[in-house]
Image (cartoon, rainbow, N blue to C red):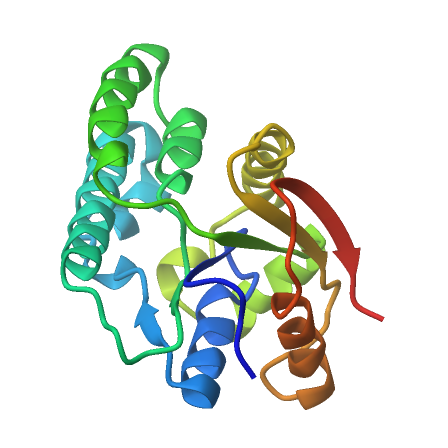
Length: 213
């Protein structure tokens, strides 16, 4: 089995299961794995307590770390792996910043983003794991990260809306919005194999909306 893509990004809201899916793919296919190192961001825990004070440093840290990781990976191509999978795509940097920063801060942030975004390739396929907010909240509670427990349904709705608005106008990358509901691809192999079968398909540029059966 081989995927028709060399670089696949798995996206979704907080708690959607991005990292878990990427890890399952790496275990199954031996692909190169790019995981966001969110625990290294020293501004993240205080951000959830005082978002207005810590929004700019938390987003700047995320952006520079994502850029560094992507740049290092694609400057040293791995020829003997079937594909690369990442649990983020770089544009999420801009989406979260737009939601979290003041208008003036976002203007500055946007200028920095566009400079950095031109230095590595876009994904060949972007899969967005879409779950209802109540499922996301249950997932967040279950994984038990203390600093995430104050995340509200309203905040998740805002992030979800920002993602969907962007994905609807993305025309340079094949985008699959995958309706997962509460599907558990970690424990249920049938769900996992359905996702894999979708990734085996060739998609045209632009938006595609699919639902697991």
